[in-house]
Image (cartoon, rainbow, N blue to C red; front, side, top):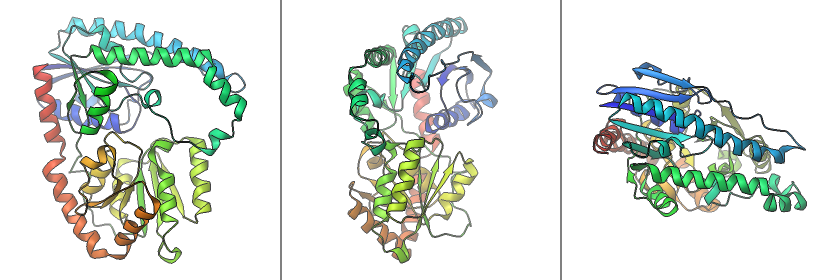
Length: 398
């Protein structure tokens, strides 16, 4: 097949997924990449697999600092219109090439790209990693949000510029998703959310993990536990710290957080919470993939407690390295972690989590048993080869 791929992604899990799919599709198909200058091109670089790589110039508007920050919603709204015009041009260029299918990935500024509307009569497949959660979910409360003061929070609620931006963003997102010929999601959990919000009937195409890269090593196990994810409220690092704070201090492990992105207020909040609970915490930001694999292999186990995570690559990456996982019993984690076999699924409760932490700290035999089962489980179910085969079928039939 001759396949066009469009994305405007930063670094992170979505770009990694696209990289792994593209690398394997390239073996049997002709791949043309369409992207913008605002995307991250170096992280999980797609260029080695592309017959053609088209970069279109796009620079988001410069945002104001306080006290003029409220004007930023106007700039963001204008960015949406600029993107719409640009993606209309990209759509026209794609049409000229007569592709068999078009795989569309999310946009960091608008989630579902407007390109989908401009290609409404073409065989498009949109991979929806998650709905635009800021529009459809209540974000976790944080002390630094309360510090803004009552008057500012009241103004936020009635701010017409913010309302216009959110309305434009939501309308575009829904129209764009609906315009796709086929919508893919990364989990059964996410399928339910996408179906409810967008009134479409998506298919599940699970991500995978590179089993030749994420694998057990001969590195010595160290006295720390690991969590991975962007340093934002939705990743639930505060719950892990509260849970570790309940472990007796003489056996309490170090807590290491590996992040590709850091929200400064959240970083300060997590740091202060760690000090309050006497949990030694180390932050590893923007590390290489090799360093991440090393962390997985040296950790006693991984703890992953994001809020309603649509899928989450962390558990399968950890298990591929033979490292057990304690994860919350919600979202996509229910589909990846085998309770009592590759780790534990727990409720969002510090006491319950601390009990499972104690089990894995004190019972090395259990850790080793989980480790062996985890690696084998990933080999059987969570390879990118399995995932790509399903994607190929969808692309050929759309």
